[in-house]
Length: 166
Image 1 (tube, rainbow, N blue to C red):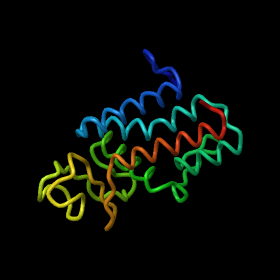
Image 2: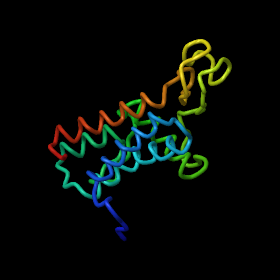
Image 3: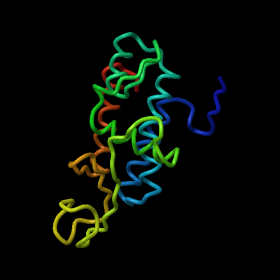
Image 4: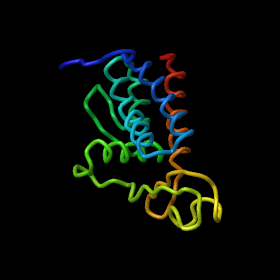
């Protein structure tokens, strides 16, 4: 295994700080570039935690519930993951690989709205306004990408605080 880390990104704490900076950038400028970077960082953070932290069995179980991944036995289980983390997983994987071929994603569409009438999916945002944002569609439900990111960060925060990892 080769560890290629660089600059100020030395461990999961640094990547978590980067995630918070990216989320702030996305909130100020909801562009495709910022959505891509933020979602990939949300999803990759779990790999950095697995590589850096010495996890107890309780931590391992919590990380499995948070991200569907565990270092102890290579088990993957997304059944307990939050909707927000499943959205991040799908968007990150589709962003990194151009399309998802190894599983059937729950996210069916990501759509940009500039807040004007007719932009974005029907029912997303106030009629004729609401600002620039991305809508994420899963089956018949629409999620605001900014809220998804905020909740995913809060879930990582809870995990890190629970186990005194930050």
